[in-house]
Length: 183
Image (cartoon, rainbow, N blue to C red):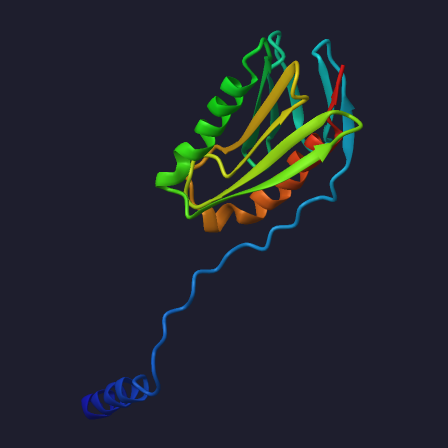
């Protein structure tokens, strides 16, 4: 009996060494996001915009805002500043915050948006890599108002894992900029 057990174990060991053993790649969830629909956000602030119905919008007294995506554990933080002959200083400050990510970013690209009729001049920044905020925007009427926003996730930055969520919310941020109107 011991002889057959030994032969069986040797046969199992020899047959298990056939072919190359390859590690399994990491698996990722395939995420499905709802089709985006938007609603107009009204306030006493000097601007209006459209936000996703999937998000909760919280406006503050100083016209700053938070657009929260509870299911994605993400928030767009929006800052409003009125211009008092200091437009260049404000824009430099906003741009400085974007380019502070240069140390960890793989790529920083921008996409301009201009609407002469509504007097909205904006730029959307994509920051690829393991950074704190992967999408930012700034918008101005070039005379009185500057609105800037940055997307944050409530997790340690792992760009490869959150790219689908970034792209989903990036569309909402672009819609915000395109629907922006100054009062």
